[in-house]
Length: 79
Image (tube, rainbow, N blue to C red):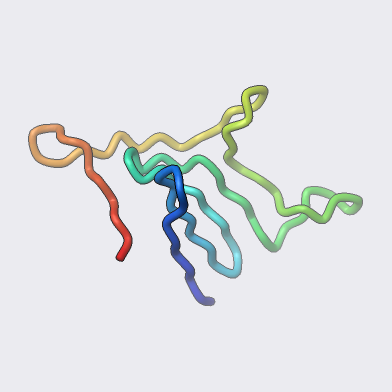
């Protein structure tokens, strides 16, 4: 499949393939949203299953703690 990547306001990078949609914090590398696009939540709700999210009542994220030389944070940029 094809992969699309874009930088959004608020320093979040969105990566979307035919199977998965990810939102990644640019400053930390944390995955803050992940959706399985081909799998609905239920027979009644066709929205894709969301694995990670930042909702206050159910916060699930994948933290990366990415650092560079001398423990400096790694900054991701898209051209």
